[in-house]
Each structure stands twice: as structure tokens, then as C-alpha cells.
Image 1: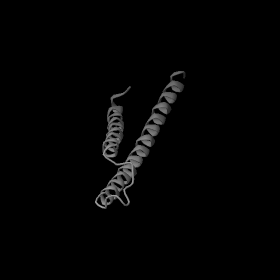
Image 2: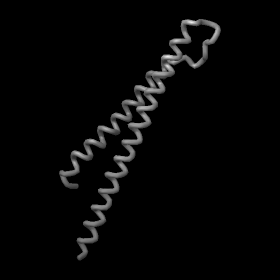
Image 3: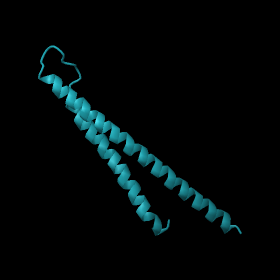
Image 4: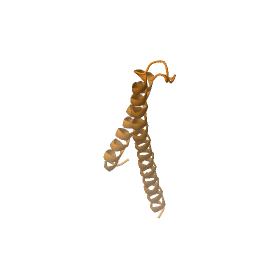
Length: 94
């Protein structure tokens, strides 16, 4: 592997770590969420649940976007690497 791939591999690693961090952040935020809906019992809890739901929606939106970008980046980089290996293999026989 050429050293010219090091920046691209580093970007891929950073993207994967960012997706992992988003996953952990989502799990931690959701762990404090109450699963039952408080409609009549305590009116103080309703705004908290609405705020938590909004926070989780925002985290989910960015997590999905970051995951899609990461997968696309890794597929493109893998395709380029395979293409270069194929071209190098086909020209080696000449």
C-alpha cells in the first residue's frame, strides 16, 4: 500500500469513530428517557419528555447523515483501491 493512501485511510477512521461516538451519545441520551408517557399524572414531566424526544430526533438525524456519508466514503475508497489493484494486476502481465 502506498503512503499516499494514509490521509484517505485516516479520514475513513475518523468518520467511523465519529459514527461510533454518535451511537454512544444516542445510547446515553436515551438511557435517561422515560418510556411511559405522562399525560395526566404530572404536567411537569410533559415538557421534559418533549425536550428529550426532540433531542433524540436531532441526534438521530445527524447520526443517519454521518453514517450515510461514512458508508459512501468507504465504498468509494474501496472501489478506487480495487480498481487500482485491478489496473496494476492487468498491466503487470504485459
